[in-house]
Image 1 (spheres, rainbow, N blue to C red):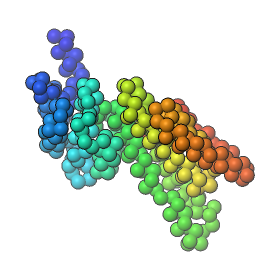
Image 2 (cartoon, helix red, strand yellow):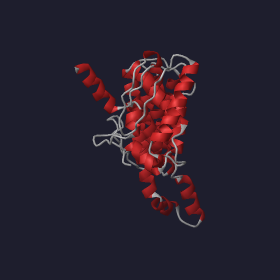
Image 3 (cartoon, rainbow, N blue to C red):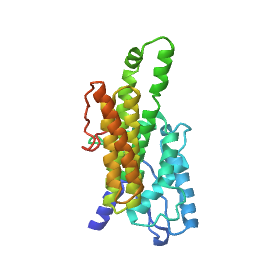
Image 4 (cartoon, rainbow, N blue to C red):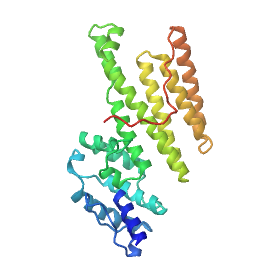
Length: 298
């Protein structure tokens, strides 16, 4: 009786899939009403599982989460990765990488869906389809992707150029885009923190390849942040962000030698930005890059 109760309790925290060969009936949350048997033991089994998941998600997930009013097949792929992770099963027969699937899901999310993803994180997390379907590290990476895309969407350089072309001074142009600059900075900072947290979780699970992937995304996001600062003449802050990228890449160098080259490049750019800041009399504005990620604001 205790085992059944424990199993039921776990199932309410997320969708539990049974293996076809096990003949078990999966217990799933009433909110989604998905009952799918999953087997990842071979290519054909994976294809059958994906088709079953796609049908179930199409009928069960909130259509307002996606711009085209349907759950994309990439969400089924991420659910399959979560299933494999929970069972310690191999993912070798899942043809599409989870990183690419995350990009696909993020691309189709509606504003409501993006908020739903972000609301699954932090102390006040809300339980919804994403928290039920996806493992924590994959969900963290999905949220980071949403935030990273948001950061890129502000197109600050174009806005500055347009203002200057219209007769504004650069100082005036920078003042005009300050609100969006802050939002962009916030999005990239949070995204990088979430990628770092995901990398740590993957590492704790012994998934070194996935940890490296998430870690590289964290480092690259810090370079995006640094680029934002460089483009808005905040050279001290740019130096901080480049140094943050260097630290991430150096940590990955143990598992991925190529990351050492990225670390060296980030360090060089950090030193260049710092020199420029000192030349202009700017002071660096250190951020708590290594304190983990706060819950993102939707």
